[in-house]
Amino acid sequence: MHNPYIDWKSFNCFFSAEYCQQYLKNNYQKWMIDNPEKKSYENCYAFLYYLEHGQIYYQQAEKSPLVLKPILLFYGLVHLIKACILTKNPAYPETTAVLAHGVSTRKRKKQNYLFCHDEVKIQKNGLFPFMSEKLFHMKQLEGEKVTMEELLQHIPELDDLFYLLEGKRNFVKLPIEGEQFVVPVALLDHYHMTESRFKEFLISKFEKGIDFSSERLSFTMNVNPLSGSSPLRCNIEDQSYSLPLIKNNLFNFPELLIHYLLLYNLSMIARYETEWWSELTKMMPNRDYPFILSFLDITLKKGPYLIYQYLMK
Image (cartoon, rainbow, N blue to C red; front, top):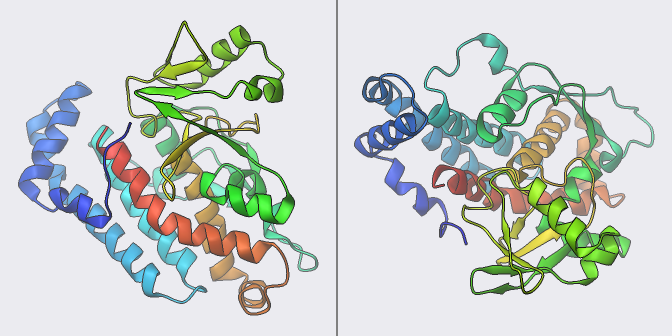
């Protein structure tokens, strides 16, 4: 269903300037970009170094204490994302406007602050809106706000933790038979939809579309579901696929963007909210701690996995 991924060894093919040049050239030709030979030659080392630096950040994050992990993971992911952008936009970065983070956090209340209730706001300029448009064709996100809990609810590896701490599920798993994803009929009741309405709804949420079976409630995909805008999520811990039970603005949000927003906020907290961050990591006072700890463990492995799926699509 998707490109096989082991760990960082899967990126080894990119640590060759010759291979990177050919890879970029193929991408530029696919997107009908002028002078693909010249531009791939100019960008092959930048592309390679973005990936290499990203890898170093992730490897250091794995060894580092918890208080530093969000900072290292955020900048590791930023480097990997920049490599992805170079596959679509050989002129990146064209202006300084795209170098900002592209999101902002609100001023925090010092008393009774909860990470899960905190939110980020998407800005007009910067890396986040730029990559949303260039990599996933998503526009008009400026001004949208999203809470950390909403983001965490859309990461399938956290589903068991939500169930243990809050007694609720955020995903329904889809069995795979052959090349088909089988949708449990109970999902129709949860969404309050007829079968025909559900099919229309789900087809509209996949960037490349899906094909439903005429015999039962199952569908096939012609492209990697993890490389574009899609509600289908892959749990890399048990290799299962699932659909979100929560139908909000994040329903078909690419998971790579969700990891970016969470890491951005956590890295800002680790840098500038020293007192709260230290108390959280030492005192473990509430449910924020297990969610943050679990997310950081997941994103350490899943960030590179999602990048690899995008590069290999």
